[in-house]
Amino acid sequence: MGFATRAIHAGQEPDPLTGAVNVPIYLTSTYAQEEIGKHKGYEYSRVSNPTRDALEVNMAALEGGTSAHVFASGMAAITALITMLRTGDHVICGENVYGGTPRMFNQIATRYGIEFSYVDTSDPENVRRAIRPTTRLVHIETPTNPLMTITDIRAVADVCHEQGVELSVDNTFLTPYFQRPIEFGADIVMHSTTKFLNGHSDGLGGVLVGTKPEHKETFAFVQKCTGGILSPFECYLILRGVKTLAVRMKQHDESGRKVAEYLAAHPKVSRVYYPGLASHPQHALAQQQASGFGSMIAFETGSLANANAMLKRVKVCTLGESLGGVETLISHPATMTHAAIGEEMRAKLGITDGLVRISVGIEDVEDILADLDQALAAIS
Ligand SMILES: *Cc1c(COP(=O)(O)O)cnc(C)c1O
Image (cartoon, rainbow, N blue to C red; front, side, top):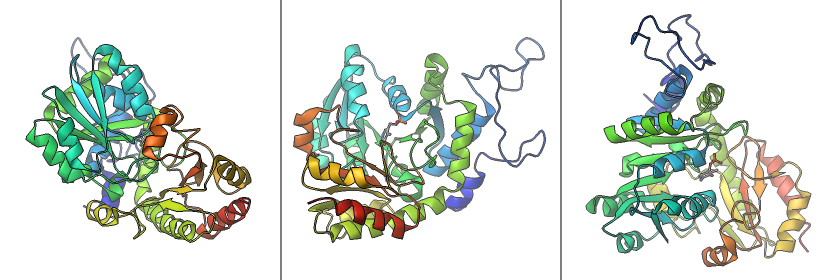
């Protein structure tokens, strides 16, 4: 079955009790049991809930994994991932990932004796060099946030597997509609479903998609033990969002390309970061492992004053954190998503004070372009 068909039907058989076409929101904490030890497969909603089950089956089907477990947010999913590890274990993480990821790793996980190295994973040799006897996990994002650097998933997976290390990929930016890391050897796929999967900026969520029986066992056990599960209502929102993922992503991609081309030609914009531009240094690799480029773009306005001048003026675009909604969201990484990593790290990565990130929505693209045009005119 094709992607759009799976998005609409996987895990979403009509309700056996009533025939309801939509998966009902099972708002229940507990389930009646017939006698001691005899029940319908559900005992308590921290452990399992039919609405959550439907979403988890759907997520595993879209990414091509064998199991999926959903959590209260993307960060809760990353935290669950780290609970697979023990004191003394070592993790290699891409150096340019979502800012909250290294914050959790460095300020919480290190307290439990887990060690982290940050490397530029766009060169798989950097990963090879960083592997230690204690390395258990490599965690990457491709494209990266916000500079849209691509990592060769297959090459990094090969390096990992030679050394018995697992690879997890945060696939939030492209979604399984455009990129399925498991097909390139990733062991685990992670998402903030808050973004494109849900797509309507109305709920948080996170997911871990696994490929091995121990992933299923471990992540189900983590849900039960730590309780950072996703509520039935938010599971429903994501199921609803995912039904239109294919059509939304097509439009995000089409408009993303137009906005990137517009920005690349604009005299006030000195640089555009978008893998869909032929000028992107990894344009060919992006085409190899993904079937589209999405709608995340970063661009250089030259200074904090220039960025602020334009960001104050936007009207169709909304200035705010987050991404992946139907509405165009625009943000300033240095003071927003990447404030926590510090000035020194930002300078090392190239996240300047003039850098602006845009998540192109699915409004009429002419309106988005006109809005950017009038906002960029504010730069002197
Ligand atoms: C937003 C985001 C996260 C964190 O997810 P939350 O749902 O906000 O907790 C992780 N990774 C990426 C790439 C993100 O964009």
